[in-house]
Length: 407
Image 1 (cartoon, rainbow, N blue to C red):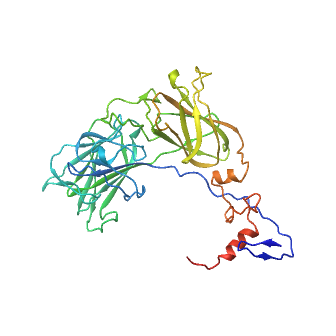
Image 2: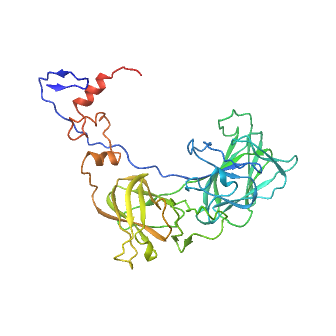
Image 3: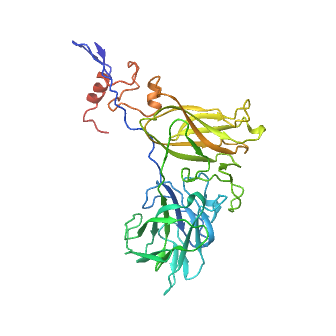
């Protein structure tokens, strides 16, 4: 006899055999592209567009406002605190990431609140150019999405080679159609922080840009170290809210310093079958003594792992304590984050990985923590299941009890 989920009792004439299925679903975050979103606006229109573009970055994505200027830095939407509505034209980064160069000639401006209803408008008979520069880790190969709501053409000038694409206009508001209100220039090597050899020319209206840099994750095994300022891995620069003008680097020979509250950097990694297992993840730091007890929050795939601290007993080595986690085969993102309301002090040199053995799963809570659910286990909260990670008659009962029901 057993008690079903609706409260009744069912006589049983056969022994129940609990079936535990050891097939785990895929785990890990997909390796993210580095996406720089730019909302082109008229002077004085400082509120950034919030929402999606043709390259899907999420409905709540806030774009960086750009309304002209030579050498204005714009950064990645992945950088925390990069741009807020009250900050106007600038973004809070120390050094240029992708520069935009606009002379202010041969165009006028339109104002609006969305992505496609404002921007730069070419004067009759002229084709203004918007220069594209790349600096530091934001140099690289990009797909460049160029938005224009009015019929016309866009030209990519690349070291004397010109490629032209057109848009027809007439696309319904809130939708994106390639060739209708945007075009894509693929595999553009944004590689020069100074010259104007890469540019976008337009004959009608320029509403916005997306720079999509595909990033290769770092292969992780025992002993892997990732330089803290390895921009090809971690596309973020940390920000300082009180100095947004683009002066002075916050990197020192590959380390990242001058950290402020809630700044972070994330690193895309990949683990193969041969190297999966349990790892200790720590940081190498160069830190003044009074800051050695400062905590650093650590995350795996946006799941909080715990904190690392500087080891006061071993100041020469410059090692932090470690967090221990399983790294299963696949792609993941490891992130450190400076805690809220914390004074700066750390200079982070690198992120290090030490494999200590095979993956350890102590109980069903670990299964849940890592997202390794059994496909048909729909009654994991039923107290009669020990352990919960089982597919058995309770799951069948729950399924049958709700068969063909509607909300």
